Picture 1 (cartoon, rainbow, N blue to C red):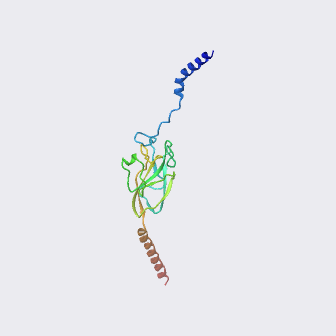
Picture 2: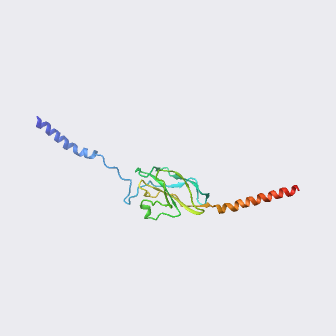
Picture 3: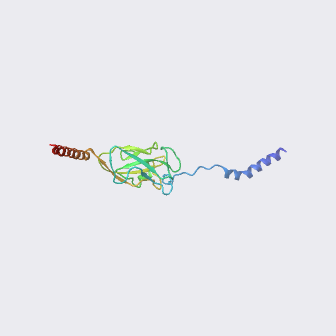
Amino acid sequence: MRKFYYSLIVIGTIAAAPAMAQQQPTAPASPQTDSGQSTAPSGAYSYFVNLKDGDTVSSPFKVIFGLSPNMGVAPSGVDKANVGHHHIIIDTTLTPEEMTQPITVDDQHVHFGKGQTETMLTLPPGKHTLQLVLGDWTHIPFKPQVKSEVITVTVAGKIAAKPAAAAKLKNAKAMYHRHHKHRH
């Protein structure tokens, strides 16, 4: 009788083996492509909410980051499909090779790895180019790239503000003198 039950268990195990093999959990498909880049959904993009090409700003100025609804923001290190964090690229662009590697950290490649969606940016007076690039949990840009258009902003400096202030003062003096001239 014992052999009979043993045979049933063995036969049952062998018969169930293919079904069990099919039910075994498989590792989730990696969200990364062969290049090491995470895959972004088609049409994903980032954008500047409060700035547009040609704007003139005073430094420091606020920059608000926008992201298409098919993507999300999370701190670096969070490995989740369609989620990344922002980087501002200042006065440069990323080469095709740089778009497949972790984004450099320096004054021209500013990381927002805590998942920030806005910042105060301080730049010297003059014209500057800005671009947002979304990086994955390892700071590598997505494929296809999730980025904004490159915009140019002019940072007004104290030199530009002085002539305007001087002109206002000159106009005020002229109005004062005209007003008092008519009274006498």
